[in-house]
Image (cartoon, rainbow, N blue to C red; front, top):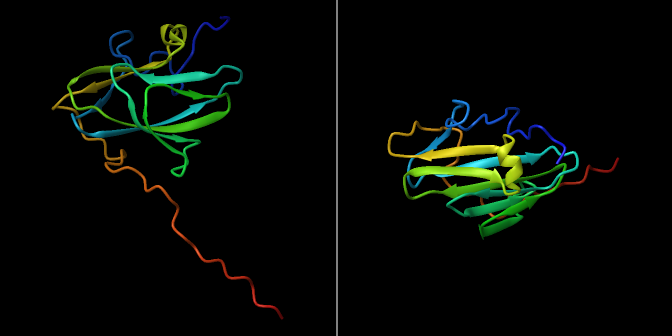
Amino acid sequence: RKFDHIIFNGGIFKYHPFVTGGKALEAKPGERVRVYFVNAGPNEFSSFHPIGEIWDNVYESGNPINKLSGVQTYVVGPGSAATFDVVVESPGAYPMVTHSLTGALRGAIAVLLVGPDAKPAPLMPQTPWKSAFPQTEITPPASQ
């Protein structure tokens, strides 16, 4: 490959404390972690995978109607996105990588540290999305 670095969220090894001292992502055992993933591309596909776990839910294009469950690895094309849920029951370090591992070696890796002392993450929803959008009634404008 011709890339020196592949990044997550604008940083090389940004969420990998063992390589750069970066800040790991943290969760408590049993806590739902939601990852919003965009593959900015422009040309490479990303096979996103949590090592040692499976995605409980994957929402293609971030749309809650497009729900898959029990997914090991999910391919996100250039210019596309997905939302991932995982609930890790056991303490440990869980790397999340693009499964073309040369990308992980160039910086596209995030470590999820799961333990009882993890700090709360208020922006992470604790319940899965509903599977359908709320129904809305559209009223046409009155004719004059």
